[in-house]
Image (cartoon, helix red, strand yellow):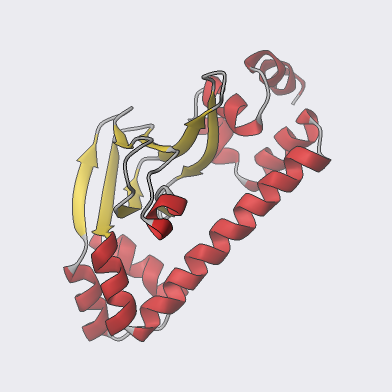
Amino acid sequence: MHKQLSAYIRDKITISDENLEIVFSFFKTMQVKKNEILISPGETSQRIYFVGKGCLRIFFLTEGGTEATRHFAFENQFATALVSFITSQSSKEFVQAIENTELYYIWQNDFYHLLKIIPEWEKLYRHYLEYAYVTNTNRLMSFITLDATERYRQLLAQNPGVVMRMPNKMVASYLNISQETLSRLKSKA
């Protein structure tokens, strides 16, 4: 998995071997079981995760108690309850392993320490923040401008792994549609 994180970092930024070793010195590994919750609402997000194998889901509960999935992070992606991580305020989201998952993680204070001592790390962080912003903005726009069929087709085109790997209940919550609607859309595809 060390090679996997190294490849991801080197794909995003130019960094010396020496500085990469410093970065790695702050990361730890963990294995989480399917359905394990890493962050719950009310907790502060103090770690950022890199998925080596498996999947993390970031979701929240609506006022009516229904799960609303905001993001899936598959292999070679970073994930956390980002608003809580940035603000150090209580999370309103859950971060959950959807499969048995292998992770690298770094503590928030270590992450920010790297920003101070390794200038290239700032570029990686900027890349992550820009990706999160674009992803969230595109999802919001899709809810406003696309109907259920168009959102489903867009998901199939942009991220088919969600439809192939995730249970229908989670795919439906990600698309903000009912499971029945999702079943109809899948049968037409």
